Image (cartoon, rainbow over all chains, first blue to last red; front, side):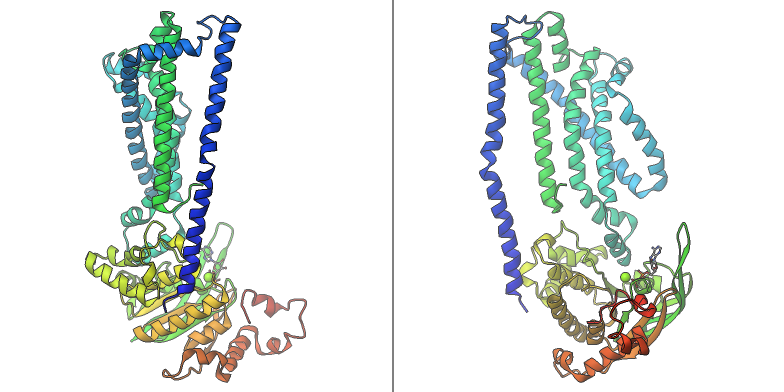
Length: 279
Length: 281
Ligand SMILES: Nc1ncnc2c1ncn2[C@@H]1O[C@H](COP(=O)(O)OP(=O)(O)O)[C@@H](O)[C@H]1O
Ligand SMILES: [Mg+2]
């Protein structure tokens, strides 16, 4: 009865997948090195252009000047990055948590779905950072809350949409089985629907991660606490500290890349856990 | 007591544009421990009939009883195990965790679940794969897991809707043999939907032949089975087997057209068109 032939076939397939991964990682260094080389070349051209064409710093400072600022002000830059990053992280998690709960409700309860769908469409078209000044007045100038809320609202939309899509991917045969077992609706949601949607939740988080950082930075342009990257960029630019402003911009880019990289990794792990390939 | 009693059941599906009479006053009784195959062309209502027995749908008229209970009560009391053409395994669960699923839903202890799942995984010959995930298994192996899962709670009735329909012929014949062995061991009644005549004849005590538009039972063919002591595989070569295949084929196509089939190779006649989707090999 033990089926050595089928076992070998299955193991052979698994071996094939491993081989495919090795092949992929064999090209991995090219994938990393090529963009790095391109970036370095671009920086070289930029540096040369600033000097040769005598471009003024308020138009475009040289990479070396920005680097000087990065090195000399690294402490302040790190603090500002942590301040903005914390807002972005809390807002992202808050928005995503609310999105998952409401999506789960909308996928189970029809009237909630009908209620929420137009609301989400409305939120999706509002330029969320436009809410920042309003929230600022509501919460006062010393609160991080307006920024966190802006991030949460902006992150909510992509996570909600992808999660709901994931929840609706559930296959009819699975629902038939759950009914045949006499499972309650919530049991079906917990055992079949939610786990199947997990990779989609993380897919939404990946999209929302960049949005979270961008809105956290931009929300600071509307006054309030002066502790984050956005406030520092605005004040440096106002004081004609252009290389300094650019150094903060570089820090924002790094922050955005970290958020994106971490969520992308999480998405891959979720997809591997669920044995659902990322499409 | 009968395993299944279907009494004058009609099922009408209302769609936006029209209504489909999927089943028209169908009556059928399946005895305890009996193996009944439902066969007929696509759209004749085989799946619908099985879903009504499973209480996955409700009849428009008529009554379905399972072990004397209304179908709904039978479902809630887990009177049957079920398997479909798609194995329907949860991809993030291991083979063992998939087999444990019904037990888990009904509150069995972790130890009891594990013991039963290991036993079943062994029964369907996948002992070495208990910790694999479905995407590491072939289609035939996935279908075995689905069968193991359907047996989890010792059901006295198995409902199977073309469980081998998506498999290649060799895998299919092997699984047919295994199903017969499992069924002999458990003594469960089986309602088995298929569109393969040899499959129906090899497996069943009775073959129920259905026709579409509206879905009806046209004939029920009793199969001469070899006695229990004989090797079931030997049946495939027996004269009784070929006689039964012919009997079912004639019931499906009508006696006259079955004789004519060779002559009218091209140009589908009306009954032939009606029998589309039935494998006669
Ligand atoms: N949920 C449904 N809604 C509308 N029509 C359906 C539905 N299920 C089945 N039908 C129709 O009922 C008839 C019988 O279907 P089915 O029982 O699936 O046939 P079979 O399994 O024999 O191929 C077909 O005409 C089919 O289109
Ligand atoms: Mg069918």
